[in-house]
Amino acid sequence: MLGEALYDLAAIADGAGASDALKRRIGSVDILVRDWEGVKDELATLAAWARGAQLDPVAATPLAPFAPHRVFGAASNYIEHAEEMATKLAAKADSMPYIFLKTVDSVIGPDDTVFLPPESKKVDWEVELGVVIGRAGRRIPVEQAHAHIAGYVIVNDISARDMTRRSDFPFSHDWFRGKSFDSFTPMGPWFVPAECIDDLHDLKLTLSVNGEVMQDGNSGEMIFNTYEQIAYLSMLLTLKPGDVIATGTPAGVGMGRGIFLKDGDQMVATVEGIGTLANPVRAERAEA
Image 1 (cartoon, helix red, strand yellow):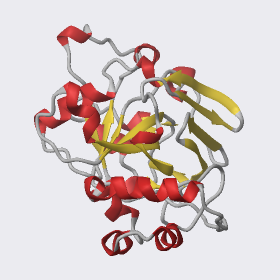
Image 2 (cartoon, rainbow, N blue to C red):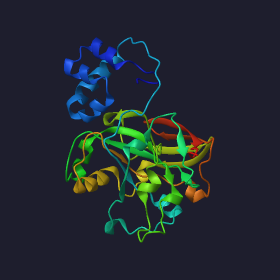
Image 3 (cartoon, rainbow, N blue to C red):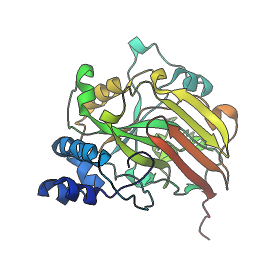
Image 4 (cartoon, helix red, strand yellow):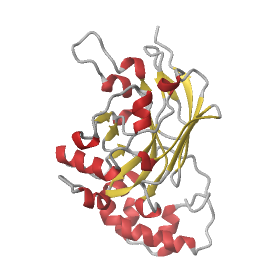
């Protein structure tokens, strides 16, 4: 995508004389992301060539930009969001990020439908900056974390609030059950390389439902910034190309307002510099 138009990357590669190795990868963004360190410089050269070329735009229907390797999510990472959820946080100096996993099978793309499971009456929205890992690493220092970022996507972390708590076990929270229903991770609309964003911690995030703005925040309001999240996660495991970290959501979710998604709603999530991700909402019909 250049400006507001879409162009055929294969045609650009032919016109710019791209290497055969890159041409073999161009048919799959999954492959490009997983080999980001090997292709990013040549892709940047193609983009520079394309800006000066006379190209014909193409018509296309955007999908989820790639299939993530894993999807991590940061919980209660904005102070005002923690307050609206009545979450009591320790001082940052005495704490660490709270990170959970979402299933990759819950990922859908722009304009795909989010289905409301019949088991939940409190399905909620969360616009988030999604950070895509492009370089593998373990025990990454905070000051080196930026070098492991390939780019960014929008993530809408759909959550069944009444399914994240349990009383039938001594464990009070069930993040897996509340956040990994099919269709609960809209992602997209574009994969935007890190070099295209000047400051990832100064991006406006908004989400509207049926045209009414619900969330309006800035990525600079994170408690643990992206680099700190990368350092924390890589302490636990090796981060790999294609991993996505949903870095937390600002205030304005339905739980804090006492309203939730219903059949026929339309969500529109926007992150400055990344794009706009729209998804309709429909009730999932239980099988007879």
